[in-house]
Every structure is written in C-alpha cells, then in structure tokens.
Length: 462
Image (cartoon, rainbow, N blue to C red; front, side):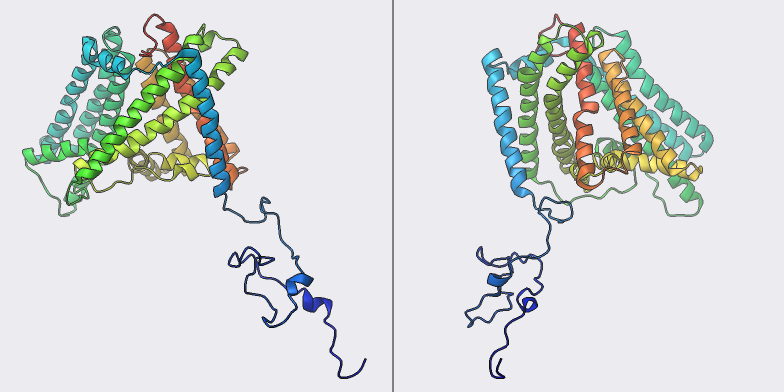
C-alpha cells in the first residue's frame, strides 16, 4: 500500500458508541439519534449504514426503564367501554329499561317513617352542646381536668350507643338507608368531638405554661364549635385556614357533579345490581361454593364502580362544596391513592382527613406510651375494621363479619406480601384488593339483606 493511499476505516471506527435514545430525530433517523451523528454532512457515507445496532433492552422488558404506556392505557379504556357497552346492551335486552329515579324520590319523600332518620340526626345536637358546656366548666375551673376528660368520654360513649339503641328498638320505623346515614353521621360527630376535647385539653395545658391562648365567649365558642362540626375536617384547631371569597361557578360545578353522579349510582343499582339480586334464590350464607363465587364475580364490577363513584361524589364533590361554602382553605381531602404501590400507602391516601385524625389522636398518643410503631398501626387498623363492620352490620341488622374478615385479610397481604410486590406489581396488588375487598363485602351484605326482604320492590334495595 502506497503512502499516499487513504487508510481503510477499521471496524471500530464505524461502530462507535451510540448515545441512548434521543427521540429528537425524525422518523427516518435510523437509530433515533437525529442530528447527533458522527458523519460529515457533505460526505456521501452515512455511518448508520455500516452500524445500526447497539446494546439495548426490549421496551417491555423490566430492565428497559420504559414508562410511557399512554397508548396501552387508551387501548384498555376503549376496550373496557366497548365491553361494558355490550353488557349494558345485553342487560337492556333482557330486562328492559329499569332506571326510575322518581321512585326513589317518592320513596324518600312520601313514606313518613323515613323522617325518623332526620329526627334522630337532629337529636345529635345535644352531644355537642354537652361537650361545649363541659369545656366551659373546665375553663372556669368548676370541673377538674381529670373529671372533665372522664365526662367527655362518657358523652362520647353515649353518643355511640344512642343511635344503635334507637335503631334496634324501632326496627320497623327506620330503613336500612336511613340507619346507614344515621350511623355515619354519629360516628363522624364522635370523631370530631373527640378531637375537640383533645385539642382543648392541649390548649389548656399550654395556657398553664403562660402561652397566649384566646378565650372565647359562650356565643363565640358555640360559633367556633359548629363551624368545626360543619367544616370538611375531623381535626379541631383554633384558626382554620380560610379563603377570601366564595366562588359561585365552583359551587355550581360541584352541585352538577353531585346530581349527575347520584343519578348514575341509582342507574347502576336499578339496572345492573337489581337483576343480579333478583336472580338469587338464597342468601350467600346458604349458597354452595360454586354459586357463591358466580354471584360474587357478577357483583365485582358494579360494586367497584359504585365505590369509585361514591368516592368522587363524597371526597371531591361534596367536601369541596362544603369547603367552598364555608371558605375552608384546606382542600387536601385525598392523595393519589390510585398510584399507591402498597396497601399501607393506599390507607394513608384514600382519606386524608381520617388519616390526620388517626395520626393525631391515636398514633401519636400510642407513641408517647412507648408502643411500637407497627403495633400502633395494627391497633388503629383493627379499630377501623371494627367500626366499618359495626356501621353496616347495625344498619342492615345482621352481622356476618365479612367486612372485618376481608380487612384482616388485606392486613395479612400487606404484612406478608408487601415486600415481594413493589412498583407496578404492588400497584396491581392494591387494585386487586380493591376489586375483591371491602366494597364487594358491603355488596354481599346488601345482597343478603335484600334476600331477607324479598317482598319489597327491587329498586329500593332496602
């Protein structure tokens, strides 16, 4: 080879290291590096013509770190819409159009025995008044702190027992829906009053340390208490963050959401769940295993949709509506629980006000008593499971321990499987527990209640 002849390019000079996916080039940029090529624009040689391969993983491989699945998500949504459209069409062909919201309104307004629920809810005002009077007596030194705390706890115990006693005594006068509304109202009131007396006790302790604490008149204290009872929070404090004005358009949007979602829930119950209940020949407790599984699989989708709609209706539409009406500034009612990778993360995010209450009034006091953090979390979870079981068992006048058992099963899944399912797999496990968890157990409760009251119209489900 002569000295003046060009040196032939080596293999390594062609297959230089390529950068990772640039995503900036055109559709015809070979490996996707775009303008970041090593070739001269005036040269007739394109290096990608010689070396078009590099070390890389497939996109769907777990090592590729690829996360943009928007197209697959859109495909799943379209597939779900088409699949359920077919189910709705088949349901309409078999049963006709069953949705009639006027029957529900007629049932609520014309049946006088439902007003017993309203009277019982109005009677709950005596417990906040007692709590307010106890606080006034402690502020004036007429009742010792220890005695005041015991009287507050007695007031809370009576608050929990009073609605249950009335519901059981007037079994024929209060419907299942009315009983559920009553118990939810009283339990929410109990949580608020516990936070009220706890926070007031802390403020008195700070006052004893010469801290600046505002003392309100009786009228001011009553106004302060009832603002807290109506506000979308469970934790009491002196000065809540406030917004400057009320946005009328925001309120109208929330009202429209509540009206539309309520109608959608009624439609799902009447058109989808009602026929499933009517096809049942016996309660779940009397079915064989195969029939029980078949009916539970049929109820998974509608019960899950109802749960999602109810979450948005209450945690977003209603709480934002009441917060805007009261100029309540803290609107952090829920976190991104749909992205939760563990059940523990989901429990923290699905209801932020309840999580704040348990952390402030249960978890922190247990920590001060030297209880281990994991033990404290288990105790709080067991208490929550017992409360949920109590609400639905008392409302439907039957106790199966289904909700409590499923929540205990979720706890075991979180403890023993949480370390093995992480990332997207953990999120899939969370959604699986939601599909087969407490919402389905609640629907099974209503199924058995409907079977025991089969003589009533199917649209009421009472």
